[in-house]
Length: 640
Image (tube, rainbow, N blue to C red; front, side, top):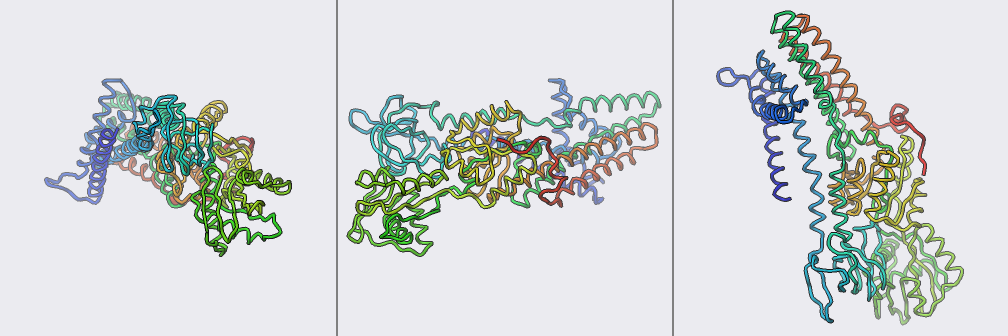
């Protein structure tokens, strides 16, 4: 794949060089500069940009009898040269070369993320045989083998833990912001990372059946299945070519004046029509760049205009993707809430667990300093036990408290359930043989998430939350953001299935998936449009997406969709204008009222008119709630 990628990139660079040289030559020609022997510099554009067009048109016509826009452009090139309009010929060649360059770039970008996924595949595994550890290539692991995974290692295959306890970072597969505690009989997945204790596992899915390999396959298959939008020029090219030839031949036969026939071919040249889409697309992309959105291709902007539903990932997209302390509550008369925070920071100060680090960070922000520790013991899958100030203290799960003879009591248990129902994760703090209180952490909602969802609903765009996180956390975030359709505890293939089969196939919707993690890459590729968070998003998610929010500013999403709709409207207006101009000039040319020089002039004036109309998009500004902008789709408001 690497060799092929380099070949594609070299070809793209060559085409870019030819386009730049051709564009410069047209500028010199326009300024009246002439080369040796008074040669028009436009010939450079004709040769560098035009010959590939002539070759492609000839090959397609002869080998496949495929009449596309290239055939009509080739006719215009030849006719322009015949009547001496070299500048017009160079202009046509230059415009078509730019369009081809954009297509090549899109194809190359479509495959880049797959190589990075392959690079993340674990190369080796630590297998247990006859009581001894042996490091073997990951592909040699078989179903039923027992593997040992040490802290910090990436899990090579899917399996079930048979001994040990740990916490596993599953963000690669599910997007969960917090590590998941694992014990005996719990499942673990390839590509996820063991964070704390060592454990032994029995392999259940290996090779191409493992979770990471299935995700790679999903990205590849989704990429291949995304149907490209056929350009209007190619769709109409056959009829335009036939009409141009019939009109030119008919006029020559009827009048006997070949100059009229050549003029018809010149004015029939679809330069204005060719410019209708790319100029509007480039102006739309330029406008989007100003407010921090990078769009991978013109095709992506066209698809954004048709979006009917936005599917959000939760962690890192609607939320910040890291745990934050949201509550500290003491249930002991001996300690205030502030004192409990100090005890929690003392307990967790040496912890490597993300929850522990978040508690210590929050205490520092509140100006609370931990006490010195006399002893510290990490208990994988449970929490930590420490001794400070002559007293024993514990921080971690409810099971850790129960193991050490502590009873939560009814009042504390009810409070914990309320926090869990709102999506919080609870860390119990025990002193001696008493649970002194709790620290509640949660992945917090971005402040502009609710406004974003509200504006999408105003634009008649439905919303859905697709997340690998647990149902309680998902429903809590969805309620806060105003999203009323939630699907939780999903693996990457579940997101793909829901988007492909339930939304886009069954409901015939156009879905925009918004995500940030590696686990979102297959869904981003499967969705009609994929939008990645550029600031916190992984490289693989960004590469899999059609557009990127550079600064993770999700409130720009409604603006982007409205801009795409406005761009689509501009393209339609451009096409109508170019077709009307072509009709009028062809009639005048056939009547002998327009010669080749005036025809070429009208042809260039029409192209300039299209460019100016498209350029208006560069100055377009978003006004939320405008009835002109909100009318892009028909249908009812958001429903579950």
